[in-house]
Length: 299
Image (tube, rainbow, N blue to C red; front, side, top):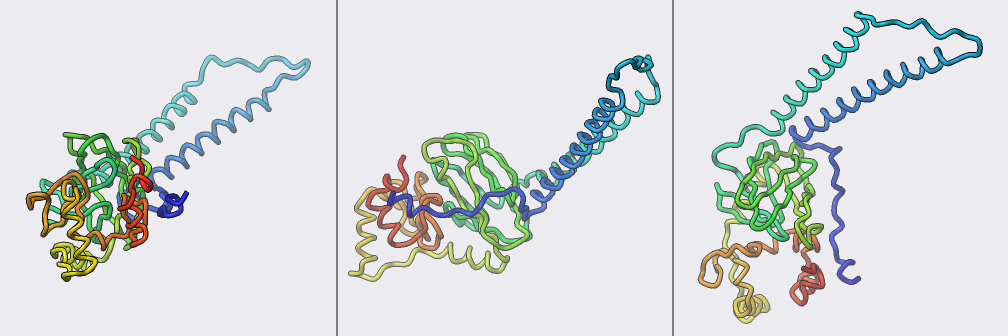
């Protein structure tokens, strides 16, 4: 119960608040299809109801005159559905073009799904982070999706469509935000014990602020002053098995290189949450996590 009390209260995941051209086009298409199908239902139901009332059986009344066929009626009830299908098909193809244009040769962002967290790499700048993706507003971002283990599903409902990450078979997707803000993302395909807590945030900000964030992420981790709690923490980090899974950019892994198993910790303190969205990034929650991570996120 103590662990549950520390969980992040996540934003609502909704597809009805599109904040990008791709998601807006999808929602618009959905409403148009709903309206067209509702109109068809009302017309068909109305005709059936009229026929039931107008031609219902009455005592002593002869059967209605039977007709072998009516060419005009048959042409009309064939032409109308054909026009509707062509209309909806055209809108669908247009929406597919808006939501899923061809990817470029070089992606802006590489996102890798792990059990159970998300790694984000910016190839053009060299920034590496985890579970917190920053993007500039009003700019389509080409994302290459990969998986380190099993099938995952990358989904930010307000900014882009769903896309599966497949081991050994990269996929691509576009993400864009018209409005600055923090948007909830999830894994929407069951991938193991902590699938429900494989969340992430997409932080859309003005281009100038995004550039500032990238510059700050490229700075080396600060060196702690000698004989301080921070220095003791770094010594503990080095003496334990932490470096077998995690990397700090200017301190590296066990041999000074980068390891791929756990999230990069270089600028861990700048992130809003940890554990892929399971806890707010506060000293108290971090203490609980380090003391017994299985109590916070079993598996």
